[in-house]
Length: 469
Image 1 (cartoon, rainbow, N blue to C red):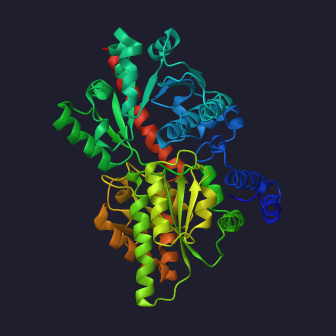
Image 2: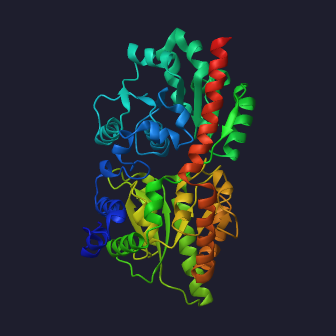
Image 3: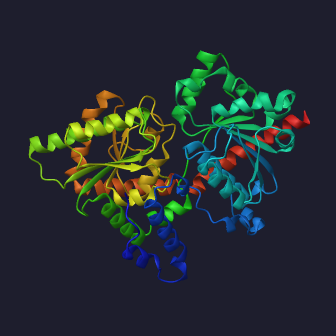
């Protein structure tokens, strides 16, 4: 279990004047959260924007933002769930960006729950603090809001199940102003009950070109329907994460704290995989590759720092069969002193500051985008990723990281890549520096805002043209 914040963390968080106050406060919060075992507290990944920002001067904010034209627009956001997973949190970020420029934002979660759990309550409370109105998924108010809205954004393919049961005969009226934001890459999401209205909406927004092509071919071949106008929008890092990534003191303090909590030395080499623990994320193959890398180092008699594997995304409460298998593998192969399981968290910054290499090992078709990849690059970390999905649009193989095949055939190449980076300090540093440069060029929050703004302008124009016709 992580230890309480150290005196050095508190001292560094004390700041060096007004310009450092916000970052130091953020640092204290990150350290505190990293030490917490409560999932409900992990609301830091992209939702750190000060609520006061949303209550400032929307006119001034709109004037300096590519989303400024959304001022006073009514936007309805429909999410299939409200949880700590990537889709809902990304939609929340968009909600806050829109509130910042003065949009009226309404949120609906299309899931039934007999009682409100702590995570959902915390997320709803955060939205309310930012001025986002939260409505029940069903009822006259939901229908009226959809009909009055300037723009409706459905988040994920599964959100399509909300349309018919709620809007009923009003569906044709609302479809021309819907932007469908799709993040899924798995085949089981291609169900007609989810996406039968997809051809008739104003547009679809997808996180990578690879995923967009997959949806285009899959909907045509399997469902016999056509995709609407499709826009590819790569994601960007939040300002809050970049503040920490670019603060030398913050990174040092977080690195020291996390390494102390894990029981590893400052000179040790940490390879980490940061994803919810599941077979599709490839933690089993990651650990197999890590074990093989240790064997290769021993066989080749290489002199490298002591290596550790960190699995961030565990669920200590659930203890799934898959996670039990991971832990059994570690014990069976006698590497329990080299492998560390960390409970799932959205406070990724402390772990990115603490590690040396990120492994993005999502399997099959890979990640739709894989935001943790650009977050790691912001911390000047090299990334070892599967040559699949959106990862191939982020990592420049041999420059900002190294790619390996998905599946069992990727275990040996990943092990060799681990050994390669373990034995080449200068290459790790060079890759990290190039990755950071790529983030600054393409994957900042303002880049994402600009890309989304271009899409929203076209969707609103289509909606207006349809209303006039």
